[in-house]
Image (cartoon, rainbow, N blue to C red; front, side, top):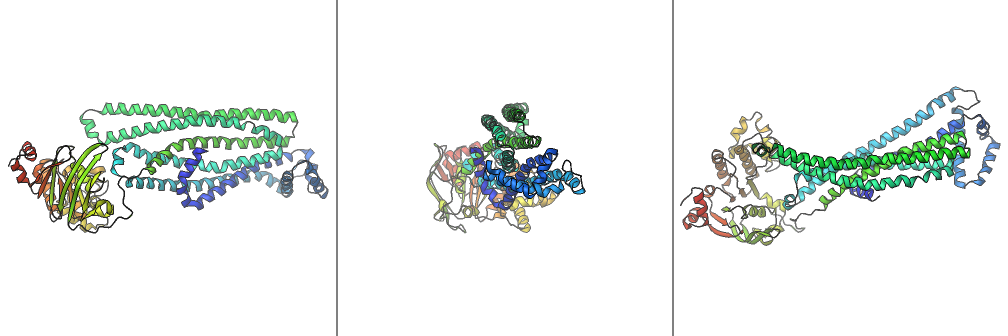
Length: 626
């Protein structure tokens, strides 16, 4: 029950949006259970009418004398049982003209009734079941679709530090596999959870009316059926958790191997990657088979215990000398009730497995962004004066990355940032975009702390062109328009011309409507970077941040891209992180960061070369001299 509650409590906020279909599924499930319970009464009634000794009783039940006798008989039974049996007799009276009776001549009504009563009941029951399952699946499809959107929205709301400690394989498994488990549980488990308990209840009620002593004897075996469910359920849950862990490792390796396929092939790592993948596969198979063993043992154990109980019931029925109709009705009930018990056992297993995925999804929803927007956040419509760093410190855990950075960037100013690897250059950019918050000091734009502003408004003032070019598997035009959603085709083409990208785009088979492939794989490095610059042009933000924008390009592509960048820099505030120092010659000021994250030098390009300090030493290594 605990795992059922976990899954239901998690899914309810999404299910209640579709409460009308959900209630229809519940009502149809109840009706399905009721119709299944009536099979005991129907089979007993039909066999009762085959016994010539019962004819007089059946005929007399409709007479005044028979009714009077029936009214006296229930003294030895409870009032409730008497009322139920009275309802049964009245129903028998209504059906009597339509059902065959031993010793009575057949007419067309009895032939028709005898032919159709069971098919009609079965058809009614099964179509009710079909409609209930359809409604449940209708709800589950939409719930899981909403849930996947909610998980993606939650992931988008989290800060970068969460993604730095997560793997793509794990996140993909949570979005796809874990939600798929919930979908299976809802579409199959919830349907059975509604129908089968009602079926069991109705059949048990009918069995109690047939013979309450035999029914109590049958119920003795119920705890024996539950025991293996509890024991094996724990094993199934443990196996599901281990299988999920192996699948996460598989998925992470797959993402790495396919995204880094050039490196894999260049270094001949194919066999190594396959061997690692095979090892994770073995783990998944091992734990998967443990789950299969536990899951598949459930039915044999329950069936064995049930058949043992059935055998005892048959012996007891013969020993007590019950009538043939009672025997047939009771055995029919036992057979009908057997399937719901098996299905509920499967539901128990399903909820055990699903609870593993639900807990993993709950972990995502419990995550909180480290960069939070203040409830009193202010809007900022434009950048007017300056961007200021005031004694900014930042550290990843206990490792300091930036220490005591004081810096002023006036509007229209061009600032270059250089330093050794790990000196905090890209971290400085991350702080400007508020991907992280400083651990000490603060950053202000026009006198307002970034933490006091709407994040969306803040980032609208900036455009980023980085070394890591991210293009989406969309058309060229759609990728450029990502800079400002809603940009017109004319604005997109103007931005492409400004980025010197229009000519190569026109040469593509479908021009601006050509798809660029995943991560822009169909384009060269220089072409991808010019599309990224066009994206910055269409954004038309007052602050331009360049993070190693030409570091990954060859000299030919760099010269083409640099021309586009210089055009993009016009009339904008520029913050440029660069490894190639020649790209900083036009900067108004350059700061040099040490490995400890401190500003150790600052000045214009020529001035720093003349000082013959750290910057000049870095420049000489790149063949640049004063």
